Image (cartoon, rainbow, N blue to C red; front, side, top):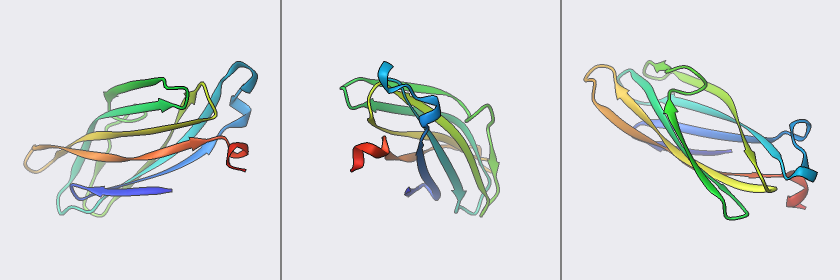
Length: 128
């Protein structure tokens, strides 16, 4: 698991290889990741948008951006946590992701960016 605090918001990421949804013979490797967002600020925040940078070990990279996460724009009170599960497919057995969330201070309506720490997705047999 990796974690990072920026702008008073802690982002933690845990990854899982999904062998039942992967097909190595067709270069299809599926990973799930669990994100935990914790608000360490003294004000309420709302997650408005996400931006991901996805890197495959074959040199391919892509960018994904959009509103909210898994169809919602969570609001977190001070000290509150929110977690969700999502996934990423790769063409190789190893890859990496990082990104950012656009947040809003619900009191002042000011926008700010929170960094999502880089994390690796590796098929377990590659680590031996």
